[in-house]
Image (cartoon, rainbow, N blue to C red; front, side, top):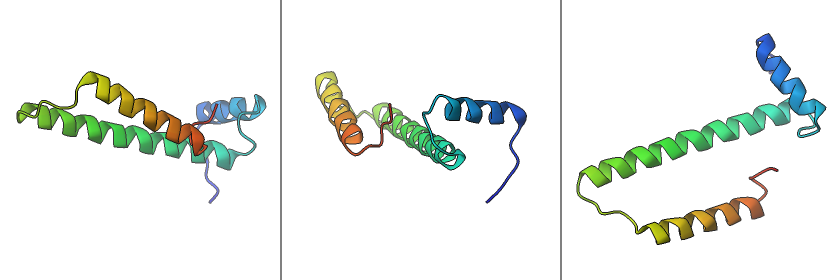
Length: 84
């Protein structure tokens, strides 16, 4: 699916290719779309948590929340999702 991108976006893509972080434009686009999807999912989760809190839900204790976040990070890293 060829398409034209603005010059400023092309510069960003070329930088990523030049430093070797990605091997193709498709990889850059795929990673960007995965990141946008994750951001959208995080936003929905935050909005739901705020709604729950406003409705009286005390939520999860902070220690447990951090434990869950660490576990998710380990899972993502192990699955190769989190790219260095």
